[in-house]
Length: 397
Image (cartoon, rainbow, N blue to C red; front, side):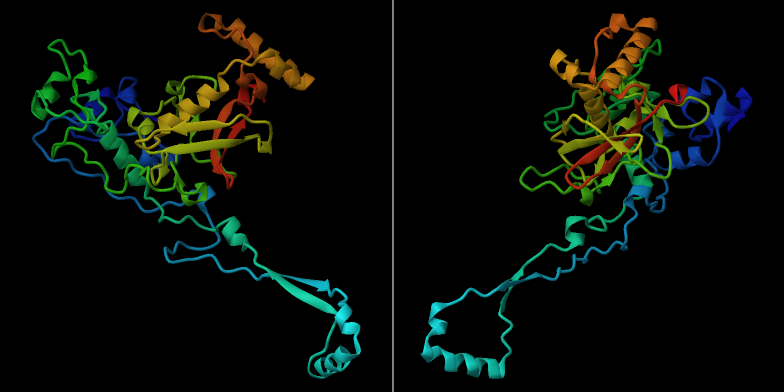
């Protein structure tokens, strides 16, 4: 649902410090509804820093909302350990021993049978894994409040003086700062009002700026990576079997075309949303090794995403785009089934009719293997990595 409000009311909302996205103020509309409110818990609307004279006030901490793909059989307990499985018992017939046929051993066998029945079998025990060890029923880490995903977005890409800047501390920060934070803040806009985000020095710290949340630590290269089932996935990336993805995105298009999955209006993801961590805790490697089309497993290409400082949502989107945007060679193309090749050509012709050849769209690419099933529907854990879900476009249903 969309509420139309007078521009005078919009102005009052802006100057009163209420959080209304600039991209909606231009249109004079403010979306309303339960989905929009839910999205605001972990992204979308971000308050601006209008001056450096007032300390930053963090957003209220939201309660933990467990996503559908994170509902497990047991409640969170950091001391929980998977139970030990019962060993597998095998009963093997005893091998005939020639010595037992001798007269001297017959009496001994009779004595043994008197105290313990001899079944003629030997029992062997083989240690086994418990099912919970193979498919754990819960993450190892405590659930993450939605507000903490958003808090990292505030820190990584704040809106200063009306300009989105990148403020994540680089691995090698500058040894000296030529200007004070106050000077940098004023230099973000030229006298004519032109924004200059490149003038901001990443890693700048000031009481008026959103701080780096203490929860998020850089990956330690000396320690092993957590298993996928031990991680929590960013809400923008999460898949649910019972509801649609929170975003709408054609995986063959650039990530800047991603928008929130609302009936109306079209609201693109904000810059801080892209800078949110992809997982908790941060990881340096993420492996997508599964693909489901409309819920059915199918052929896939492996996607390895790497960021030594910690993978963010934008890294995942670019990794998926780059994987499925690769040109298909003739040998791979000939291995596709005839109906797959036919639908791939239909998608290619659609791009040609819409003047895409100027962007190099006149060749078959991996995404064409999916036909019209190109809408991102989130990621889910599969034990050894992550599965990408895609669904059919409603226009071609």
